[in-house]
Length: 401
Image (cartoon, rainbow, N blue to C red; front, side, top):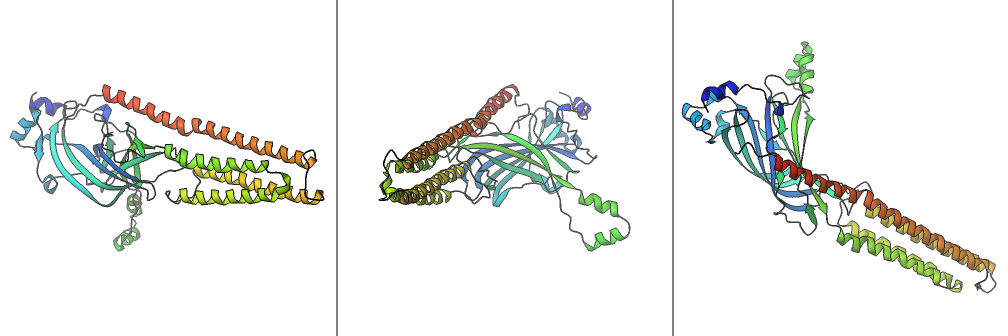
C-alpha cells in the first residue's frame, strides 16, 4: 500500500460513519467509542450503585502529515504507534465518566494506527476504569425486575467541538464470567448504546453583562444553547427471584390463606375469629416491614408491595366480616347460639365462598400478569442476546488496535 493512495483516500466520506441528525460545524470532530465491561461487581440495590471494571476505547481521525516519515512508513505497514505523553502536545477530546461515584481509578494510554477500511489514521485512547457507578434502579417489577447498568461517557468540550458516536466496526460488550453477584443476578450478553445530549448551564460574569449591554445578545444566546455529547453504554442484569418467591410471595400467601380457616369456627366462638384475623393482620404488617428493609425508599409500589397490600386488605375484610357476623349473632339470638339451619349460618357460608372466589381470582390475574409483563420482558432480553450474537458473528472486527 503506497503513501499516495492513503493520502488520496483520506478525504473519502464513509457513509457508515456519517451522523446526519445534527448539523455540524467544520470544527466538529467525531469520536467513536467502544466500551467493554471487564467485570461487574456488587450491585447495591439499597444505595442505587454498582461496582464495575471497564475498558473504554475512543478513536478519532488525525492528519497524516503530523507524523514523521519513519512513523508514516510504520503506519503504512499496518503497525501501530505507541504515543507517549500525547495529551501534553496534541489535541484530545477530554473525555470523562458522567455517572462515576467518588474517585475512579483510571489508566490512560494512546496509540495510532491506519484503518484498513477508510484508509484514515486514527488516534485511539485506551482507558481502563474501575470504581463505583451510580444507576437509577427501577423496582416496579421487583422481585422479577431487570436492571440497566450503564456507564455514561461525555466530553469537557461542547457538541460543536466533539461528537461522541458508537463504534460501528467494534461492538461494545461484557465479560459475563467475571461477575461477583452471580448468586443474586444473571447478566445478559447484549449491550446497548445510546447517544444523547445534555444542556450546559451558563453562569454569567460581569463581562457577559457588558456584552449584553453592547448588543451581543445573539452570542450569549448561542452560549446558553450549547450542549455536551454523551454516549451511554448499558448492560442488563436480571434478578434471580426464587428466594423472593418462597420467602416473599409464598409466606404472604400462607398467612392470608390461613385466615380462611377462621370460617370453620362455630358461630358460638365468633369473637375468636376476630382475634385470629387481627393476629394474622399484625403478622403480615411485621413481615412487610422486614422485607422492605432490603429495598431503597421509593415513591411507588413494587409488585411485591402490591401483592402484600392486597392480602392485607383481604385480612382486614375478614376481620370486618367477623365483627359484623358476631354482632348480628349477638342481636338475633337469645343465647348467642346460631344453629346450622339459621339464615345467619347461610350468610356466613356465602361470605366464605365470596372471599375465596376473590382470593382465587386475584392469584389468577397475578399469574397472567407475571407471564405477560416481567417474564415477557425477560424473553425479549434473551431474544436480544440472540440478535447480538448474530451481529457479533457477521460483523468482524475490522479495526484491530
